[in-house]
Length: 402
Image 1 (cartoon, rainbow, N blue to C red):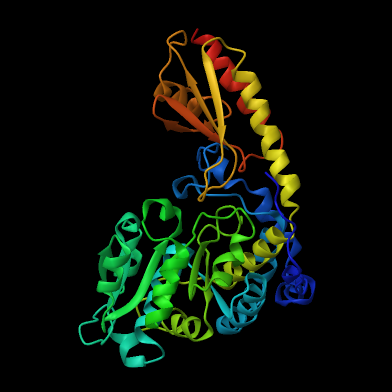
Image 2 (cartoon, one colour):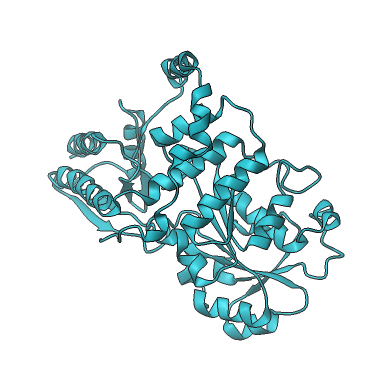
């Protein structure tokens, strides 16, 4: 499970010389201390839990790193122009990710919407104002594969663009016409389609059609941050609040300079456009940059070894109970981290639903994912010491059910 060292492209100007650092002088220490002291989760009686499930939106994805929180706090104390923040941060993110340009969006979904809108409208203000009405646009169709035709296509159709579904290479060639504006690739569904990246891109380039790829949860590995830009996709969309541990409501849109410029015209702070509600504040933009910077400079090999150690801790504990079996796998694309599947035979008198409920209602509360008759656990969202807690709780519940 080796992770390659971050490449020389990761050598970017440190944050200490950027916008966030200059705003730190304006921070009110007493206000920040007071905000930290007030535990609203406890005050409001909101259940918190150990996350052994993964970076699911409903579970508030990931926890932001201290550096990200600091960037958010310090930048909140100064007024700046939002476009300038996007300009400066976009330059830094683009350099890290090998793209011509970049912007921070309101999640990966927003990146898909804005990227598609930019392709449809360019910088034409009349076209920008009319979306999602695409009836008089010369190009208003997007081609995608049948195996990639999931709910996320709604992000693109929010712009009014019409999906054209194909399955084979021959169908793809026949589908291309004068109305084709875009070709969409859902990376996590790569193996469910019959056309792989290289062929998809070759057809698009042959006909001069822009391409967009959704790699929302496909990091790690870190190399994926630039892999698809290097491969030739015109737009790349990433979730910022999963493994990158940025603000959950943030994402990244990477790609061609002209298309990013057009996407930004379809987004705040401008109004009268389809993206007006997809507002990203200065704190999220700067926090997302800090999260990305920290992630690419992480020792990913050491991180992977730590994940394997956590999995082994849990696996060792549950296998002490007769009838319990385990399997460790790594999803090939999305959520590419060690995953522990736990199953058990009829010697263990508990269903996976009852087990997950007991873990959820225990103290501390723990979230796992049910899978068939067993449960799945991931460990990359665990905090130090939590793997041992999860291991002990699972051992307790399985032992009590024998």
